[in-house]
Image (cartoon, rainbow, N blue to C red):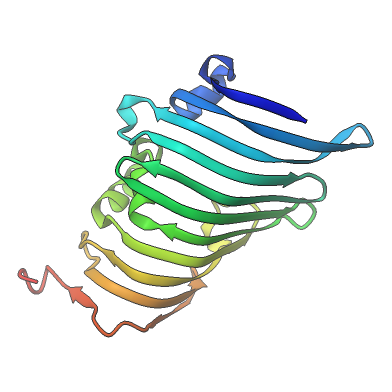
Length: 220
C-alpha cells in the first residue's frame, strides 16, 4: 500500500516521457495498492487525485484541475484497465463522472475500448493539434464537433492506428459539426451509430436537426 501526497512529478519523470507528453506541471498523488505473484505485479488499484495538470503553453490546452479517478489495472495475457468516477475541471467546464474500460488480449491482439459518456467539445479542447498529422489537425479544428457520445465502444485488432480494423458503436446526443471542405454542417443529431471503415449505420432519432450545404446554399 502506498499513500502519496500531491507533488509535482515533472522533475521526476523520464525526459523521453516529457518530450512526448509536453507537460509543464503535473501535481498528483493518491492511494495505491497491488498484488504480487511469481515475482510479478499482477494488479494495481487505487485512487488518483491531481489538483493540476498543465501542458506547455504552445499546446494551447487549458489547465486540467481537480482531476479524480479510481482505477484497476491487471497484467497478464488478458490485460485490462478499468477507470471509474473520472471527473475534472477544464477551464469553466466540468467533465461529468465517467467510466472507461480498456481490454487487450496479448495473444490474439484483439482490443476493446468502452466509454460510458464523452463530451466532444471538451475532448477537442484537450487534443494537442500539433501532435496530429497536418490533415487530421485541420479536419478536427475545422469540424469542431460538439455534443455528447454515450455507450461508446471501439473494437479492433493489432495497432489502434490501423483504423481499417476498427468497429465502432455508440449513442449520439445533440451532436453537430461545422462545415469543412466538402463536409456539410450538421446539428442536433441524436440517435445511434454503428459501423467500420467499410460500412456503417446511422439512425437519427431527432425531431429537430439541421443540415447545411454551404457550397450549394451559402446562407443556412
